[in-house]
Length: 473
Image 1 (cartoon, rainbow, N blue to C red):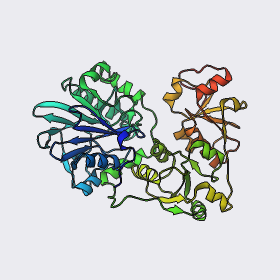
Image 2: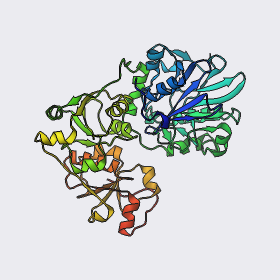
Image 3: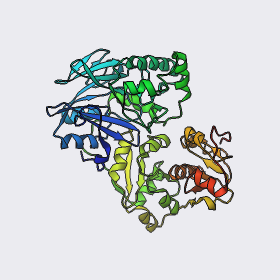
Image 4: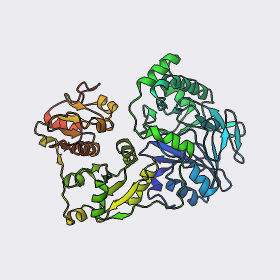
């Protein structure tokens, strides 16, 4: 598989003997995978995603062969790369026996140990985020070097417990309490290497740091400071926000095992006529160009999801995985980045990309649409609609704004909306996505704010207010 073009930016040496453990951070999903150099040309991969470009590049540069691929749990936010590593390198897959995975793996239970050749990996049952969740304690003899905590203890928080349904949220939160209390008995100097971190919708709520120690978490993690189990459960559940729709599908795919890829997936070139025919058959056109380019001219009915770190999240949240997808790209955008972000969340019905981009569409004589992209002094008294997440809105919002999270807009788009709204988020990308959803649902005269709430407040002479926004869609 090809090297990740930004691999240098994704690698960070962390924890003990920094040259032995590499964190591979997916900024878009907010997760960290880990590559552990075992010292003899072999390596362990922990919680690797299906997009293995960065991991393969890191291993190749260090002359390492991945011989173990461990998963802390059945991931809901990305497809695991463990099965692929088993195919590519012959790696032994290590995972919880309770996960009932339907592919070859070494099933582990609490207390089981794996000899890594000088180091030992000990499985610790830490249910809560999922039923079958394991943490992995890394030992050098009897010395605890660190613990891979996956979706259990994360920096200043814990992973969410509502992914298996609302009827099990409290039960799993109580299990999470016991798991965190158990991890807190490890020596204070033990490094904590979580999978979920800043930007992950699996976090509850997301923190900003990715690596810590047991001692630091005992001092700083508010959940560990909860006076009792009931207080812990109340605090954790109160922090749960929304999460992408695709989370409900991926755990089962990971249990069965994602399909092995024998070559890099491609994004074929499509003519304007082919794209038009695909749309007529129920397919979707996804425009990945920057928001300003989409505003200036786009295929009517296409969805704007700019290609950036968070592309996979919004694709999986807003687009059904059953529809064939055609992509509209700009000149300097890398089609392989579209493919890998889609594949790592299980989107494989990728028909191709519009060859020649929007100029080819117009040259073929097809109709174009535009969207008003306005600055804060050009909003013309339009009602202000904020599509940011609840926590962002609570931190500071325009007084009187209408609030609906972008993730909830698909279901609400057909409902009555404010007339002539200006849609806003933090910078404009999510707002343009929201506008494209509204326009696709038949709403007209929609504008997008090129900026955020502070820009609007400054232009209108307002002060942002904190707390829950009462004006709802």
